[in-house]
Amino acid sequence: MEGWDKGTKSTVGEIPLLATRAGPRDGDAWRQRLKEEYRALIAYTSVNKAKDNDWFRIAAANPEGTRWEGTCWYVHNLRRYEFPLQFDIPVAYPQVAPEIELPTLDGKTHKMYRGGKICLTVHFKPLWAKNCPRFGIAHALCLGLAPWLAAEVPILVDSGMVKHKDDEAAPAEASASAAAPPS
Image (cartoon, rainbow, N blue to C red; front, side, top):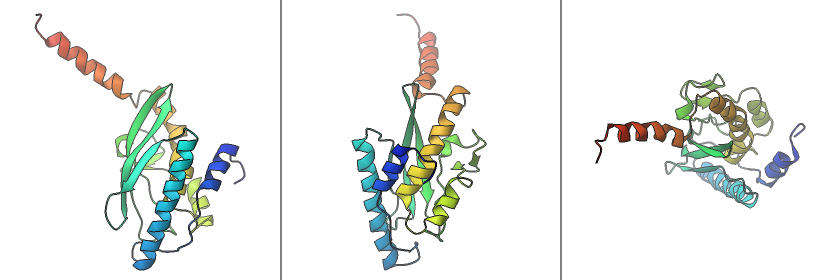
């Protein structure tokens, strides 16, 4: 945890570490791992809310807990930018970290792979490997997605690659009102 700011260290320290080494093909052991994942996600969400730093919503998209979907957001210049979030649990999980996808940003930054998968190879993957199986989904969000959003969203907004939803709606409303006959 060298090089991390105090806030990140504090937050990571409050996310429970996981104990069960199991992946989606491991039956009852996977169900135990899922319980641990939910506990860690609930703890992380509670920490974020207590620190007024709520920035994502996520839930399993299937009963097996192998597909996850939700929304994440980042506030830049006092405007909230929201992005759909999704990922699949890899077969080799927890040895292999999930590949977090932000499909609406696909092709907008070079720090992303095809399909909107964010690039975590240099900074996060070695950390995940070192902490396997203690890290889980909450850790991937905290130490993978959160720093990626903080680094990339301001650049994408300032370059015009990402527009705020109000800015996208304004031109459509203006052209509709210009086309309307006077009353």
